Length: 210
Ligand SMILES: Cc1cc2nc3c(=O)[nH]c(=O)nc-3n(C[C@H](O)[C@H](O)[C@H](O)COP(=O)(O)OP(=O)(O)OC[C@H]3O[C@@H](n4cnc5c(N)ncnc54)[C@H](O)[C@@H]3O)c2cc1C
Image 1 (spheres, protein in one colour):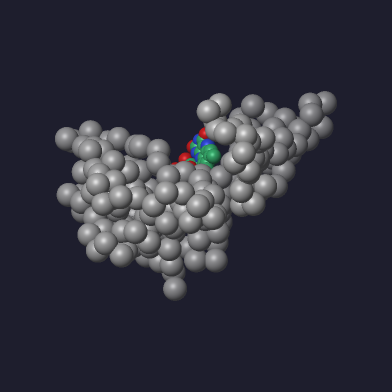
Image 2 (cartoon, protein in one colour):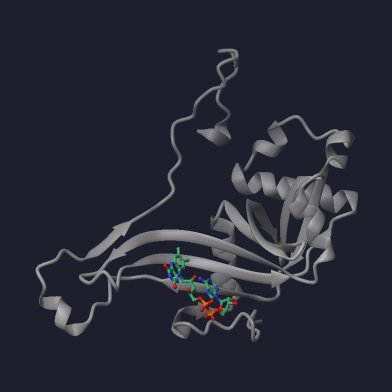
């Protein structure tokens, strides 16, 4: 199965393009946020938000009052971008500086999830994506809270990944320059937990956060 189409075909440095689930899904799953591109009243707008994948479906959610979520169902297509930054690539020349990254671009229609079971599951999937175990521990949503929440499903069948890794690629004559070159790796790390100031001391840290 390939997610390749004319509009997902990577034209700029095509060697970096990938169109298979084995490359695309781990990037979607590792990223904590995505950026959703829509056209609202003839203006393009790109909004960051949380996402999660369940099988071949990507879910996003939010307030039923969200412009983004209200606009999506009326669009033939939206574009979702997911980016993981792996490093800053320092070349000898200013021109060849770059980034090491893994990114995904997804095209597709977004549909509101009306089925209560799918909606509930999608919200659990989104929660599990961020903190596995939290959904079961948290107070479950009321009907009023469910009604105040919109969930959008985007089928995953048209997407591309683009990957850059490795050292800088300088022009041959620049390798002799006495300028440091290489990669500054970047990664997202979990910090120390900060308890809510009003949290009673008697409540222990759950295992899934340790
Ligand atoms: C963290 C990061 C930093 C970057 N910095 C720069 C920069 O400073 N300058 C710059 O020119 N480019 C940068 N890029 C690369 C950039 O994302 C584009 O790939 C590049 O600019 C070519 O754009 P284009 O529209 O000409 O691509 P085209 O190759 O014409 O795009 C055609 C199709 O290829 C796919 N595609 C293109 N780019 C990506 C991508 N990154 N991930 C997944 N699919 C993709 C999409 O489906 C797109 O519709 C960066 C990428 C990342 C992830």
